[in-house]
Length: 433
Image (tube, helix red, strand yellow):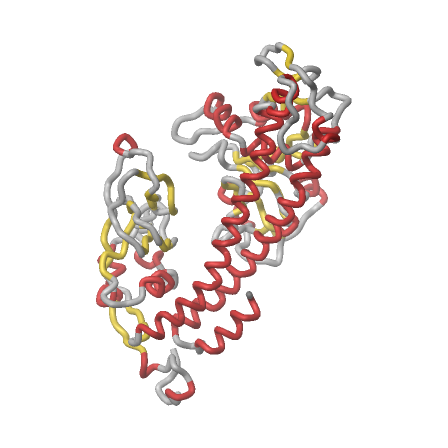
């Protein structure tokens, strides 16, 4: 906040243009609605939990724009919705914006210290009345609120565009993987006397012209059954002592179960670092293209990620398994294999434990699939050649989004406190975009 002796002409965000009070005077938070799984019907409307969109439903309870934050379980995360949605009872949603700009309120709540209102129990929770009593300052003019939201929103919009592009690129890679190695579409076409759709002649020639019987049903002629243990080397993470963790560099980042989720690393607010890499720890140093699998928790089987160059240096922590390809299959093949629904179904069938489900390294290694003959890796090589440019593009988008998120997080506090003028923020925005 600027001091009272600042000339208002020098900054459109001077103290004379800001109003002060309790959060509850500017917005009204409301607890979300119960929706047990048995009452949910497949649909297009997002169901929002304390950790974000967790499912979809045929009905919505709140019209957009909407702002939702966690009430119980995960606290401190804030979500902006631009479509009708259903906030669960583990959340709080903004019922009344009281004339304030909706997206500005979204950014305002991201500056709130939710932990100051937490009951500090084993499962974190906040009370909306406590949040309503937090003192805040906001621009009295909605034009200024919108200007602030526009600056921050431009960064988030580009991050969202990158996310959608990456999702399309991943869907494209998965489609080729599924067609070649799951549905065997080129073999079906050749067996029927047709030319495989979308394949050049050299690539089509890599597929056989008929099927053969096997223990797992019909597979391409000459192919055989193998498993992850045969085609990769598996390593379990090291048991690092948490008392030596540091929450900021310098140091080496640690890949823990909390960071590995559905194809992405989640470092924000959860990154932990180890002071240095000793000779004992060298074998746990990750490489680009390694595939990691979380081995326990509610999302076991969905907790996986491929290591990017920008994730390094990084060390592997216990209860996370590392798969490193050998000389036949490639990293893009293994990544698609682990990300395919068949692997999730396999994990559902072999996992043990109720309160904390988990899988073993041996169960991961035993996951079976079919491949061309052992001495013929040409099809794997061709798959890597086709997919690699898409994934490199996705990696660039991912790294750009990381930089944009860092810029947004730097701009957020001074913009929301009035310490940074909008014109100065816009100049920084031009450099970031």
